[in-house]
Length: 362
Ligand code: ATP
Image (cartoon, rainbow, N blue to C red; front, top):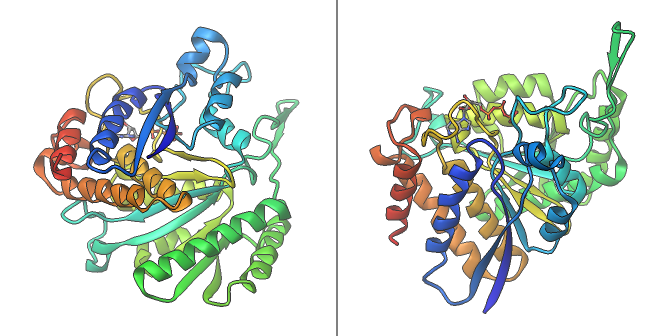
């Protein structure tokens, strides 16, 4: 039997509250098979850990995480705990840089009997993916911005051929996988601002070069402002989109809005050797400790982790457990006891988790 080692970062705010039921649900979802098992290792990091120890992402935690097959991370950062320059702790972003996690995969989909944000009936079955470049762009020099004489401020945006090529190859392959799974022609759209910035024109040129290696995928490009409008007017037209880090940060929250809540939006940050699975939302300090957090985004991220482990280790049983867990969340979200306050229901964290568990049949 294969054992997959999972690093677990409980994080800050609602982080521990959504991680605990997620680990329990992973155990239930994988219990009735004999092909693999999961071993969990909890690792410290986050703003609260910084307050206690002076370190937000200890080197030993990074070392231990590197040694695992996948990393589960809830949410990190607290607005009242800041670095001396006034910015917030973002160890979850630092980890992407440490592990070279260049592809931030943000699926956007709607739930049967789940929240409806757009009234058009085509919005009932939304299904597209945003790939956010996650280690460069406007975040590449995030700790080096300067304010000069209190008169002006500058930040630097960095696009490299090396990372862009890896990002586009990953995205074209994702488009191929989706085309196969959904039995339809594959499409990939580059989202940029190539009409104004030289860096984005460079990004677009690399995209076009890569497109030549994937003749089965239809490439296209659109400016980010037009994409923001189309995500509201006709999001059902999208398939796979790939974009720069900051644009992806903003558009993925818009995507979570289309899903009905940040509490439902999962994500994965994937590199060549490591992968982190975490919800799109932050640590939600406004509801921390109240039992109100919706764990669904965290659980859906864990389901993506099982699918990743299955696909990368020739272990179809893990991918199947991932699909079952995702289906259980989809089903629970349409039920009264699985509907959190963030989507107009009354269920708390424990109710939602137990509804997902009953949908798993465990
Ligand atoms: P970050 O910048 O770290 O991504 P943020 O400032 O965007 O964080 P969040 O922590 O994501 O903010 O919270 C935004 C809003 O969404 C808050 O009102 C929060 O309570 C709500 N929220 C976030 N996650 C959840 C969740 N899992 N369940 C319910 N509500 C949530």
